[in-house]
Image 1 (cartoon, one colour):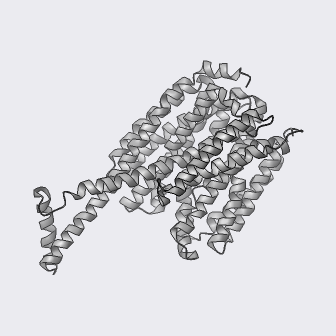
Image 2: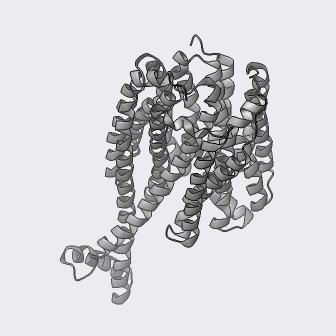
Image 3: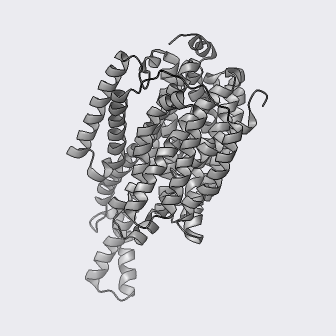
Length: 509
């Protein structure tokens, strides 16, 4: 721990934990909020969507604001906005007022992660960076996993207001600690705000995140989604061109000339897909298929989150000694094996079996996440750390959204496919199915149903079983897709050898 300032690290971990927790804790309260505010699923969805969109827009500008006004000042301001907005969220009297409060909350929460990373790079020597980011990464990986458990508990046994009010004491405490623990950073004078770059980047991020969050609702081939994707691509292309030719770019895209940073961003983005695919798919399986409650599901997933959290500082210590490649490759291989095994889940899988696979998977996540991120950031000149942190977090946010959108699409489309395939065999004309159908039919007749109703009822029971089995197979297919995506990160991780990272650190970008 020598060389790592303890008090500032506590402040930065608490702020990051709050921001990440709020990205997942609200999900379990959605059904209750629909009833309370008397709104449709499409309307209540904006409570989560707006947090994602606003966060994606403010992240890119944090580097400039931190350089201009000081990272401590901006961190405390973001934390204050987040805390006050949490109060407004708890006081919300309608769906619209909650959406507005969530937008304000995201304005502060979206900045906390990139600011935290930038401040760590200002406080900690590069040779200790692995351990520091490993400690900080505990919040980044554990918070999204325990959010549904904590949210479910508060909603079921207390009140939905508490999922927001819980931020108030923690936020106030963190603000007090931040004022005393965080050192003032140098404020750079003469900086010009890159308005054109900000607008183009905001449009690109807003469009892609909105398309990813609403694609399943509107249909991926709909004009609305295609327009959003085209607008995002066009805006991003203009943004890159503009940033390459302006004197003071908001995000210095020239940093991507550094191969180590580029590969690091790609690898860590894929790791985010792996993280959020598990957080997304497992609760659906345990609740929709196996009938567990949100709290029970959270308890199933909790040990895996703790395993990831425990591995993060260990991986950080090993990173400082051995570099990124051995740890990242090992972690990704573990992820590949365990994610692939998850495609064998059945309705009869026990929670112990699921927990065991998730714990081992959590170890793999803990081993690979921090080295993949740190390897690239360690090659960034100190003066550009704030901008690089913002850029890295933009890609990670988009990757997390992309992972959830892709898993949703695969799960939905494969469920339709499996339902159609299995339904072909549900018929009294099918020799393999007729015995089971006749057994159900006889049971219904014995219960007082007439022959026609019993036959229709038997087919209905069979189709219910088909739909359930189709859903299980679709989730299994989603895990296979997630496995293939994780495999793509292994050669990227292998590239991040100690010698290449050290060589990249010597480059002047």
